[in-house]
Image (cartoon, rainbow, N blue to C red; front, top):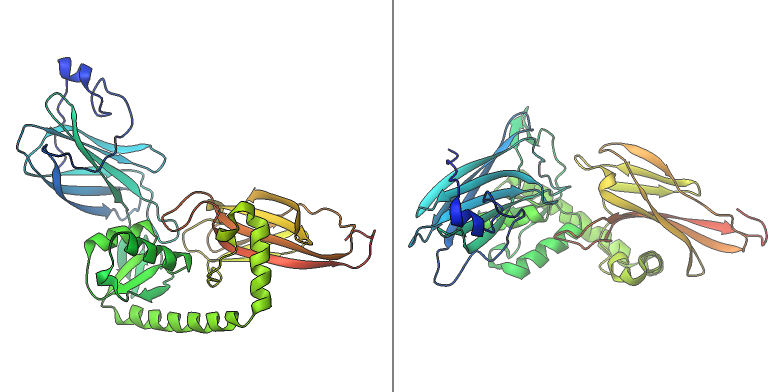
Length: 375
């Protein structure tokens, strides 16, 4: 049940710097959630629910605090762009307390987009002076069984699973590095033996679902790993192609060549296919949820190691569809080979990759055999 708000008036309101106070400034205050020798949040449990219409959702929060002195709790639910979805006005802190927040319309989490909200909690004293803050990531999604299929947000997702070897021993930065590597290799499901709520929450940031003791998913994970091993073995024998890919990646990325060249030579992204011609690029979007527009479409024409032309365009290709995007193409007057390349790049930093990371790419080789004869 949502608690009643407490109106802050008088000197306390005048001195309050919280976004929750009547006279306060806007915007959250982030911190580590702990202030020495002062009231602090000791434990938080978060449970989310999405309605059948997939447009409304709620989050139930239960927390335990060191209520050794009178204090108030404030809460905000924020989208990544800072927009406020819901708030709880200052309420008196108890050693154990719970509250519920609603959001409508809600943007749902899925492995392809990994959209998360920020739940920001503030503890303040009677004068509304800050005692401590805590921020938690919250994802809204709905699993359900229908006609023998397991659906995520009303759609059957495509699983690319891996087995969580050494999962139990990983924590902190090691766990995050492990998940980032798997996500860059286009895995979206981890099969673990033992339930771990804290790891599940971190996996949400990387667009990774967690499964436990599921023989079918585990079988798929083993088959997927075997197929990838075969792919990598084949790729390792193509030194010339590897060198060409790295060279093209370096030319396209410029100062960020290390991100685009993909030294690890991860398999191609199964969510997208890019077929490049002189006129443009055909983008086939095999995603279930994501539009290709969440990436930048970068293109580059390269000759003798030099970039003759490059640029970026928007690629509006809904999930499950394919569209041809026209790209500019200059006349070629010098003889030789020209490489025309297109790629989908991350628009912003994510938990698993930085802005500019190459998610998918395609290229074509164009031969101009005669000088002075444009292709």
